[in-house]
Amino acid sequence: MPAEVIRADEWHGGGVSLFGWSNEPDDSRLPRLLHPDGGRIVGVNGHLADPADVSRPPDDSIGGAFSAWIARDGELTASTAINRVCPVFYAETADLHIVGSRALLVHLLAQRADRIDFDVLALQTMVRQGFFLSDETPYKGVSALRPSTTIAIRGGSRTISETPLPVAGPAPDSPRSKRAAIGELAEALLATVEPLRSAPEPVNLALTGGRDTRILAALLHAAKVPFRVTTNGLDTHPDVILARRIAAALKVEHTVIAPPQTAAKDAVLVEHPLERAWETLRTCEGMTSAYESIVGYLPYSGKPTMSGQSGETLRAGSLNLLQTDLGDKALLRRINNTFYKDEKLFTAEANEHARELAKPWQARENRLEALDHIYIWYKVGRWQASARAGALRRGDPVRPFLDNRVARAALSSTRAGACPKR
Image (cartoon, rainbow, N blue to C red):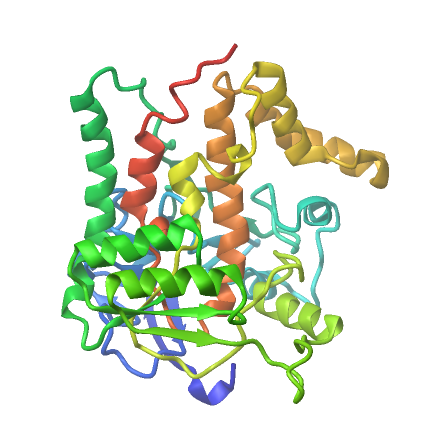
């Protein structure tokens, strides 16, 4: 994005410095970029459902999609939420501990020479899947902090503490327990849209024909939050047709945005693959492939927007969506293929590295839960986290399925725990 739209703040204490940058035009969206909080300074990447919660990190029960940095004299901590969609990266040199939200920046600060050192072996998972199935990055010496984890540097020493992901409970055995399980998730979803009732204008929902955005339309409607909907596509596309019907049923304004076309309207215009790859590489720091559509830069807008990104969180993750055989061998095969498919295309060293990364997940007794957690750790925590970097240039949309409380309630539900290992 243009340098002139960036504003910055910084704080310096004993042995600790905290820097913040933003393309938001002012501090009207709380908390502030660097927020004084009773003798410490708090920086939040992403958004808190309730800005007053800025005093609570690190706390696993906070709502929103965020990571938090806390600085005071002689101490720095940073923490991720349950799906780490707002990432934390860290590196260590002989003189410094460096923690940040951008992996390349952390790497450059850690380098003695003005150059980039790539971790070529770590990139094997990018070639296989198009995103990272590890806590590695493309840059030597830089790692991603795990979900629900806090890194703390005190007196020059680093410690990392991790809270395990929730374990799914047994299947409900009565209508009351079923309602309770659904009710917890429903309450978490409703809490994500509660702040939008006071928004100065209707929320813009990116609506498709898919189930995830249909849930969000129903959620906004039930919560009595004013909203309108937007759909990208041609008039003949199923997304547009279904979205139009939904908007009519809910009596909300619907806007269709057609893709760029030729003057004769006989073809859709697409960007050159090299331009697409370059934009993806520089925006996402080499942590997702050019297969993904990265949102281009526009001036930051504070208008409330919403999308159904990562709705698979409610359905045991995307790795389980097409799994019909729930036997142990079939589920283990899915785990194996996730980590080291297409072995003939890779070197022995790359395949051995992939197998090492798979071992902790292969050791899980509950295969369904393992696949569910792989989705949260990597498909959301690495893939969505990197792709999200493009969207943040335009604004910070509310994404209920990425909310810390929603993800926690979904993982605690029964859909993964109800099918034991066979």
